[in-house]
Length: 323
Image 1: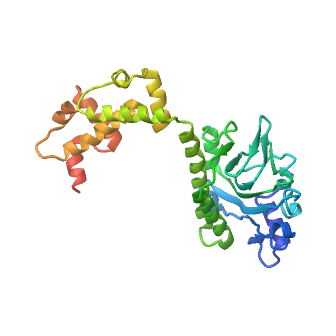
Image 2 (image 1 turned 90 degrees about the vertical axis):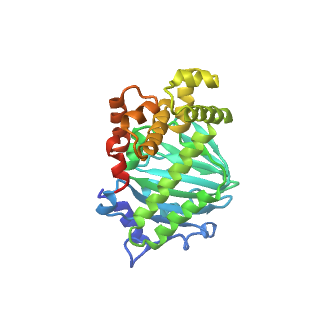
Image 3 (image 1 turned 90 degrees about the horizontal axis):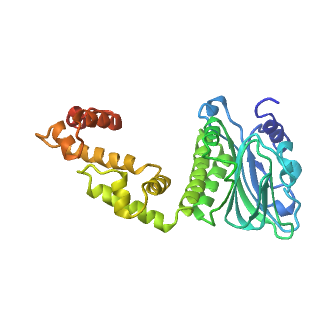
């Protein structure tokens, strides 16, 4: 099959005058009158970004409706969602009303309002609303090397495909932005739609990260940061910090990196370099003096570290910022 072939065929069925355009579901059965979907085209220029949006939509599935509604209006690849299917792309779904189930080969989840589902390419899955209840869903499909890299690095993982994020207007607004780009297809609409997809991924991942971190994690991180900032002119290490706040060095490293994506050492170096920038701006202050004041015994190690972090040698910093 040529790239986008199933998108082309579907568009031709629904629109005689436009190859790729609005595939509104206005002509479907009454139970889908509030729905909208798009299977989106993309160019070689779009693909150079490493990300394209392939589909977007919103559908109200009323009680006692066979799922998916308007089944034959979807490309064959997408129809078997309630029985089980494997897609060559990613999708994110957000359920804002009703109840249903979502399953992979390893687990089945109960879907309620506020559930967010992540579909990964090559992973068999199914989902559907409870027949007697129905639901409302938003979705966006996407693919490309950028997203594949996120999966390769484990940022998007088959072990984390179900998120109970709750009902949030900002998530609905992101989907509304994507749908608006899909409707209008103004210049660079693929770029705008993909920015919405990235925002959805960020919402999904940050919610998980924050929900997994108890309040005491935050307190430990705040105490560690305060201790480092008030001792920026000294030479302290992780055992010093852990002793001060009452946790083991290994636990401190684990909590701090989970919460900030940095180790305590990396954070401590960061604030030292930031303080060094301020000191180097002053007149009649040498690099050696700055290194000494910040607890570096080796001036040359400090200089290498400073240049590595800022891209500028400390001896050139004053001239650099005054350019």
